[in-house]
Amino acid sequence: MCGIVGYIGENQAAPILLDGLSKLEYRGYDSAGIAIFNSGKINVAKAKGRLSVLDEKTSGGKSVPGTMGIGHTRWATHGEPSDENAHPHVSKSGRFAVVHNGIIENYISLKKRLEEKGFEFISETDTEVIAHLFEYYYKGDIMEAMIKVINRVEGSYALGVLCSDYPDQFIAVRKASPMIVGLGENENFVASDVTAILKHTREIYYLEDNEIVVLKKDGVKVYNMDREEVQKERFTVDWDVSAAEKGGYEHFMMKEMEEQPKALRDTISPRIKDGKIVLDDITLTTEDIKNINKIYIVACGSAYHVGVVGKYVIEKMCRIPVEVQVASEFRYCDPIISKNDLVIVISQSGETADTLAALKEAKNHGARILSIVNVVGSAIANASDDVIYTWAGPEIAVATTKAYSTQLAVIYLISAYMAEKLGMLTSGEYAKFISEIEALPDKVAEILKHKEDIQYLASKFYNCHSIFFIGRNLDYAVSLEGSLKLKEISYIHSEAYAAGELKHGTISLIEDGTLVIALATGQELFDKTVSNVKEVKARGAVVMGVTTESHENMEDVADHVVKIPETHEMLLPSLSVVPLQLFGYYVASNKGCDIDKPRNLAKSVTVE
Ligand code: F6R
Image 1 (cartoon, protein in one colour):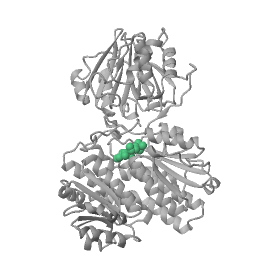
Image 2: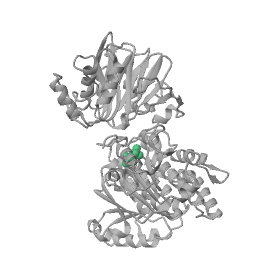
Image 3: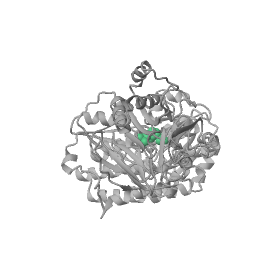
Image 4: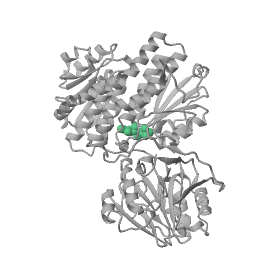
C-alpha cells in the first residue's frame, strides 16, 4: 500500500521517479504524484488513476525538470482517490512537499490545532497535516523541524520531505512503514522497497524506526532523534534486475508460479547439511524447544493458510499444541500467552500492519517470536527474536504463490528440526523426511510442466458463479488457499470447507452443475473424502478431484481428476497447492481479469 521513491543526483529526477513508482505499482494504488525541486521552487504534478495518467500529464516527466524529487503512489485511506488527495502534499507557503506511507492516528486533533492557527487544508488526507506541521515548526533548521514533527505525530509513517530552502538535499524517515536507502554513484535514493531502485543500485541501508536520513548527491547520512550520526551497515542486494521484471511472461503471477522450484531450492538447500537440518539463523536451543509449552502461529491471508498447514504438521510431528490465528483477531483477543510459548509470525512483506501489531502484542506478553519473512530488514524481521528468511526473491503479483510455497517449506524445516531435537523421529524417519523435502522442487516443476491440463479445466469452468473447495486436515488447509487464490484474482465467489462439515449446512448450496474441487491426497482420509464427493455428486455437483498418482479410484467418483506426484504425507500441501494456483490463474485469465493487480487489493497491507 502506497509507494515512495525519492531521488537526488545528476540526472533528471522525474523520469527516474516515474520508473521507480512503476516498480511499486504492485503494492496497490489509485493515484500518483511527484514533487521536483527546480531553481529554488518545488513543482508538483499529481493525478488520480494509473501512473500512465501522470506520465502523460508530465510528458514522461519532461515537464517537471530538476535533479531532486520525491514520488508517491497512493492507496486511499483518508479521503477518496482524487487529484487533491494524491501526494505529495505541500505546506501553506509551498516551502515543503511531503510524501507519506502509513497512517497518522492523531491527525484529527493536529488538524484542528493547525486550523486554529490559520492553516488551510485542501485535501482530506492525514498526510497534509505533516506538510503543515513542518511549516509550523520550521525555524530555518530542517532537522529540528523533522524531530519536532516526529515527536508530535502518532502512528506509522515513511516520509520523504523536500524543502525549497535546501537545494542540495532532501530528508526522509520511517517508523513501522517500509523505507530503504539506495546508495549510488553521485546519486542516492529512498524507496519503499528495493525493486524501485534495483536498476540504479544494489547497495542499500535498512533504516530502523525514527532514523532520519539526509540525502545529498554525493553522500547519505543517517541520524538518530538526538541528532547523532548513526553508522549504518551497507547491504548488497543479490536479486538481479530481472527478478523484478516480467521477463517475457504475460503476468508476474505466472512467472512467480514458474519460479517456485528455484525459490524452494534456494530456501531449502542451504539449510540441509550432511543430511541434517541446520537452522543457523535461529538461536532456539534444544533446551528451549523442550520447554515450549504451546505454539501460536499468527499471520494474515495466505500466510495464515500456511499456518493452518503448520498446525497439522507441528502437532503431528512434535506433539506440541499449536493455535493458529489471523493477526487482526489475535491482536485484540487478549491472548493467553506465557513466556514458554513460541509465537511463529509469517509474512512475505514483513510489514503487514495487523501481523506486526500481533507480534508486538505477543512480545508484550513475554513470548519468544520466531518469524518467517521474505523481505530482509523489514519491520517484522527487525522486531523478532529469530528470523528465518524465505528466499523467494521479490514477489510482485498481488496474489502470492512462491512466497506461500517457501513459507510452507520453512514450516516443514522447523517442524522436522524440532521433532528431531525432541526425539520424536527415528533416524530413518528423519532421513526420509529430509530427502522428500529436498525432492519437492523437482516435483513442483513436474506439476508445472503439465499446466496445460489445468488450463483446459479452467476453460471449462470460468463462467461458474460459485465454486467450493473441500478437503480434510491438510487437504482442508490447502483448500483454504486454493479458494482464496481463485476469488481474489477471478472475482468468482468461492468457499473452502472441511469436507466432513459440508453436510452441516453448506451442502444446501450445492445444485446442478456446482463445481466442487475435492482434495483427497492423503492415504488415511482418502476414503472419507471420497464419501463426501459422493454426497455432493448425488446433489448435482460437478467434481474435480485432486489426488496423488497412486489413488486410482478417484476417477470412479470425480468428473475430472488432477494428479500430483507422491511424497511424504505431511509434504503433500506443497504439491497440491500448485494446480490450485494454476486453476485460479487460468480462470482469471479466461475472464480477462487484471491478474497481477486485482481490484481493491494491495500487495502490502500496511494499514489496519
Ligand atoms: C493472498 C495474499 C495475501 C497475503 C496477506 C499477508 O494471495 O497474498 O492474503 O498473504 O496479505 O501478507 P504478508 O505475507 O505480506 O504479511
